[in-house]
Image 1 (cartoon, helix red, strand yellow):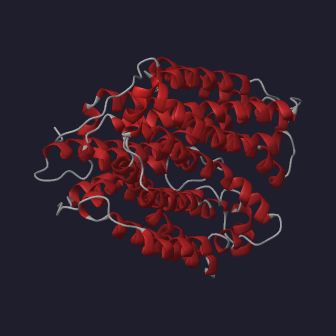
Image 2: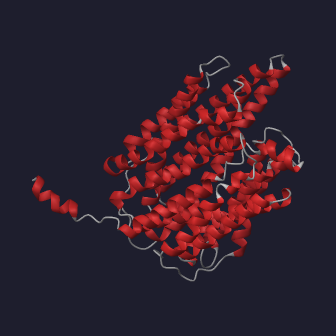
Image 3: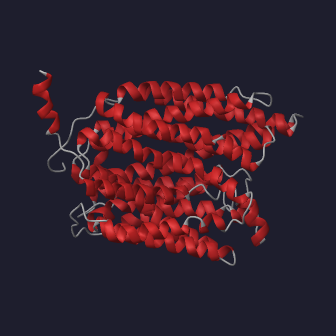
Length: 481
């Protein structure tokens, strides 16, 4: 029997060498551009001193980046249909490299912000491009292991950003955060111009300008409002609820137009007609709320409550990123063999347990225990992200891969902003209340961190219940319905 089965296994389609090269190049390029989302998080005090700007102004190097991403990503479904992979890759890397150079040489804040916006225009396209290319090239029985590597890019790149930032800033100027990346970006651009080929067939899709404007106002308003809620300084030009409300109204109008517009929708929301896509996406969002909430909360706890340096804080969160990166490829292989449920359900339980245990940390908790709990949190996310993303996109017909990856990437940005807003809002309110009651700053912050992780734990319980609904998806072929 074993001998008879061997030829059948050998006939399963494999990934060609040129396809492996293309995916590897896209992976490296995407890691570099996503890394820049969080690399500036520790540089704000340096910018304030060097450029003589306020904290609220300096925050725009991150806020402006996220806002630009929120405008670009929803349009990537249209971009994937209208242009070839080669055209999109070269344009994205030219934009990213140009923005990096402008930011590195900026004599003042306006040009620095301009560079960050140009960077984000290139960054926003790369992840949907990578995912769409993988879904078109990789045979179904290999998708889990390849998506596992993509999970490293999605989760580890933003996680190691603060660590690298701390190392660089301990010795060099903030400009080196861009100068270190620039040669890699330029090398990727040149190599891509030589190696990247087209794997999709562009068609003359029409851009619905009104949908683009509504998505920009909707997603931009939500990202800005949630980021303002998550601004620990509390100094915002307008009350955060105003852009959130405007964003919600614009998104309702945007969603309605996608079903009524004549011609091509900007973001094809028919993906939510697939039950497995909707369930997997919902659980993924809960995981990303925990991921980005933890990313923002751990450095605050370590630096304020435990009095460790910026560099030490960055190094202490690094094991979690390494653990997630090391587990993701293995999780991908297990997904190919067993499907999502044996991975996602335990992952959701461990995720929830880690958040509730992190709620117990205080000023005297051993740092080794804190690091271990953070590793536990990141390992749980490794068990969830690859199976969920692969199941979500695998439930779609190939004609919706571009729109499905655009929806996932857009909602991940919203989940990141929501996680940051949730954790920082709870932290700030508890800290202020405890400080007013006479607690020391360190004790008040410790209580705030605890309450913030409790809020994350509550969210994680929803993820545990929803994870029970995840199931293995069958390959979908044929026309888009």
